[in-house]
Amino acid sequence: MSSTDMRRRLRCLSRFAVTDMGGQMKITYIHHSSFAVELDGGDKKLVLLFDYFNGELPEWDKDCALYVFASHKHFDHFSKKIFDLATKYPDTTFILAKETRMNEKYMDRWNIPLEARSRINYVHKNEEYDFGSLHVTTLTSTDSGVAFIVECQNKTIYHAGDLNWWAWQDDEKAHHMEKAFKNEIDKRDRSFVVDAAFLPLDIRLEGGFYKGFDYYMRRWDIVKAFPMHCWGRFDAIDRLLEMDISEGYRKRVVRITKDGESWIM
Image (cartoon, rainbow, N blue to C red; front, side):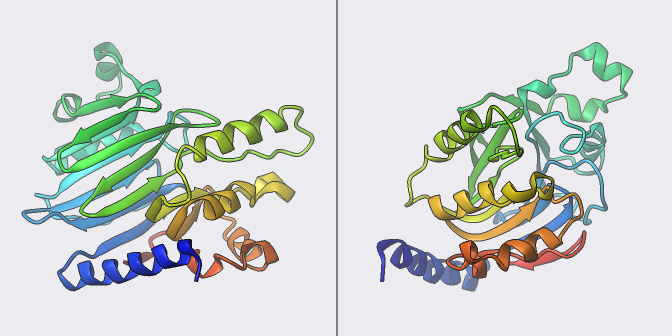
């Protein structure tokens, strides 16, 4: 058994032990690149909501600690609708890439609720932050904004945002893109364990659609990988899993078929 396999096996045994004590993690696919992660926070439930812009949200306990993330300001990752959540869930914290920054006049114009404004935190690239029981590390996207590494309740959760190997065909910047992507991912070595990773699998890249996803899976020790940014083309997942290249990790890739699906880990 390789050292990587041994680490994964020990991690799984540890995870089952945590589950026996009630430390389950529920993951719900919302839409496109948006996921909700629910964790047992002891006194109250923790809910992490990533890159919401559309789709039906679950109903959570009103007293939950809700952390809302936005990796960048592209329309398919960020919507001002998220700020309405602060009127429904009083303990809401917004963790937003700094490029989404809004001044008071802008928030007035867009009717951003007053309850939300004092709870907005802007994060920079390649920094570390603490928000309550969450430790958040940001990486630099190869497109726009940041990616998030979130550590809480003995779990490590990764949301890539648009940090991907954007291998567009006939792109004269292809070598630079490959280097920039790999340099960012290689900041963590092969012993880096991620319990749940949300990773782009964009069929628009045609022949290169799998490259970023594949590199993540080979470089990091990912327990469960959730494809995203598929633009509704969930057949991209099947296509990857049918390729020989995914043989070593395909059992760790979650097949998503529709919005609203949930999994317990």
